[in-house]
Image (cartoon, rainbow, N blue to C red; front, side, top):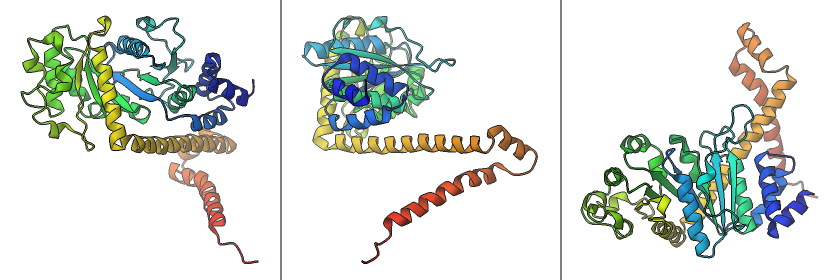
Length: 363
């Protein structure tokens, strides 16, 4: 099958072509660039949701229930589950996906596990390209579940329109750990396993951390906490200082309580996701996010291509071991080697740019 055939079949709704396209993208196989380039004109319709958080918080279970809720609404769903990569093969070490059992056999829920490929945040450019494949295929909602490794999860903002940070009761230390990084990326917070002791405290800590001090209950949060009806006074401290918590665009991240194993709070969570999407569209932030995303993709591709080009040049000069040996022998230093490698490339780029921008000679 040619790349054009693969693209045509994917756009025609062939699930096997979709799976093969994602494999091509994930393996960075020959032709993957042309394939991804062909996807761009067909993207921009899906809502992309990122779900991150500490291991054990119940991300997979929540994703499963959210997918089922979307299916009940008649929407199609694509799921990308990022798994740790094997140190031996680079492939995915499959996680416990048995928790995603509600949609088995439903062809309109397409699940794909992908390797982190050594990316610290677990969200590589291959992940972003796979999202494009699902978008072009026509999935209405695309959910990306990260590895759940901690601070590095901030990479999810480069791919998702709406980012959810998931915590579980008793994760006070986690809240503190997340404070300097992952906390700032959340558009929606979820405290899962909210039937366990300590849920109220975790909600309270989150509220305090995002500046939501006060006694009045925010409507968005209040309607999601029925199962804690006697204890909301502590758990739902919100709203009086909404202005403090709003980001620059005026969005206040809601805190949703769920018990994903029983499906409790999932519909409210889906409502919160819809609220954020509406906010992005009404403020024009969705377009700003896309421009930022494309800029990051360009930078990432250039970094990858430049690294490959330099690796080729190093090999042509005898390999990195020979260059290191020359430094060790006092014949040169790393800075001089870097200049020697880069100067010809930089000179060629400048010469080409000057030629392209030169005024044409009059006839």
